[in-house]
Length: 120
Image (cartoon, rainbow, N blue to C red; front, side, top):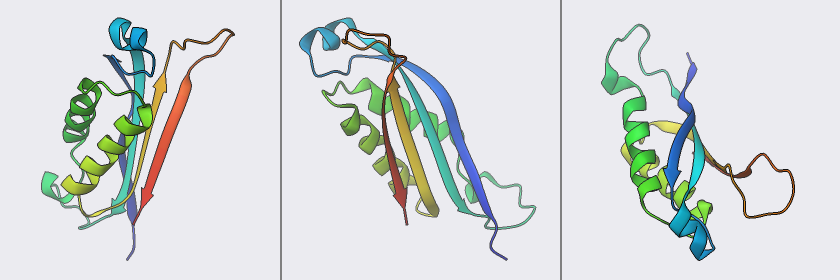
């Protein structure tokens, strides 16, 4: 039997100091992080945290990476993805997206987005 499950976090909000421009790293911004993982179901009806992805750990990983000021959101997203991959080797797919809510651009824009997907 090949059953897959998805586990993740959606819409996690952080205030952080990422950005290419020096003023972005001083003033900060709100970022929204989504993390979706997919893996095989290891055991039907097994009620053990060790056999799944702990979303509390996903939050910790994202929070730690968001605290490290970077110029590019790509660097932050890859840091989150690689740490998840190292912590949970049974995961088949990891998708990490980060949106920046206030952009230093003229125009009406909801947010910017970077997204990375890893597939085993």
